[in-house]
Amino acid sequence: MPSSPELATLGRFVADHTLDDVPRDVVEIARLDLLDTLGARLAPSQLPEAAGLARWAATTSTGAATIVGHRTTSESMLAANVNGAYANWLEIDEGYHPSYGHPAIHVLPAALALAESRGATGRALLEALIAGYEVAARAGIACGFPERVHPHGTWGVLGAAAAAAKLLGHAADLTATTLDVACGLVSATARELIPNAATVKYLWVGMANYHGMLAAQLAPLGFTGERRGLGTILGQNLYTASDLGALVAGLSGRYAIADGYFKIHYACRYTAPSLEALDAVLASGPLDADSIERVEVRTIYHGARLDNREPKHLLAAKFSTPYALAAKLVTGTLGLTAFTPERLADPAIAGLMRRIHLIADPEYTAQYPATAPTSICVHLKDGQMREAYVTASRGDPDAPLDRADLEAKFHDVASPILGPATHNVVDLTRAAESLRSLADLSLALRGAP
Image (cartoon, rainbow, N blue to C red):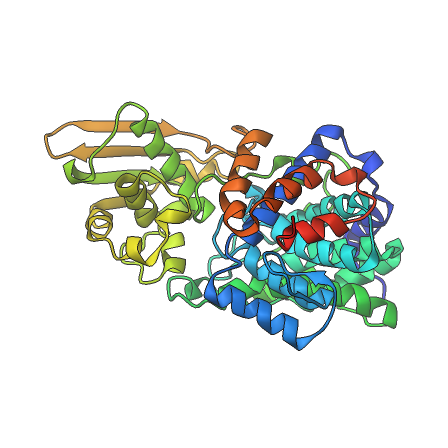
């Protein structure tokens, strides 16, 4: 059965795409995506559940694929599964606003594991990352914003499948079939699991990487998928609508990876506009949390709906705009140290959360994802008000972070785990396309100096 015209076109794009087609500034962004996503994977690797996942993979199957932050290794598909789970564990990974999700974490774990197992070059890894990111981002745009479905583990499987097909050298028609098969391997994910602190959420991205690799290896054996799988399985069964034209509109024009965002706040990206507005207030002078009567925030719907004022678990806190604002005001940061059991139980943060009020502004929401307008008014107990208005968050395409910012972020999250090898990872990713082998990068990601 032939693939749909849209997936057939994507199949040709993936098969024909080379790094020579990509502008140099986009290649640099891909290198930064590589570094940032590796940092996101490393950051949670020593947490008890995460370390247990690494032990499970290492004892379940033997292989030489890297599980980041650990000296143990596993078979490539299981390693991709574990590394994918790590990648979104702490909500510090990049994303792409028009897709309402995070393409790179659905692509890179599969790409790196398969590249390791095949002895691929750094250039081949970057080609797979860029192609897979493009497919994942476009699939996310085609699916749109779901009210009840969480995007992790859904359309991202197509990105992993595309990257795997690229590394396996699939021709255009076989790549399209791989994407068909991948559509049939999506997970049924639910947003309500997050406030309920269901940590199975961590596994969704890992399974997407696993299933993408599986699709790329089963398609050559004759397995097929539904011809319009994205439109039916994703567009009708999970999401409320789909726009298949978005899969190919402007293809081979501007690359999606060039318009992604990077995080400086370690929480759900929809909290970022409110945090950016708060930072604008704090730029005019510090605030003592005890001096605050109440905080009113007008923002896009996606941020205002994260209104949990009593998160019971660190996962729920990552998806709480009141917690993000209160923790920033009380601790002065929204880095890794703002999300600990001690901070979650902090009465100062809990009390301030109850005084934070979110309003979803329809006019602001209508401007998203092009911009994310947000206004904040901090009412002080002495009658004063401190106000600010922002339209972009640092790390957005309109307010980009530079290499120095992202290397500093990587050192912040990776140094406690990798030690001196942290510098090696930075240097190797900086020169990724010239690497004849990924062996040195693999060793560095395991903490070997």
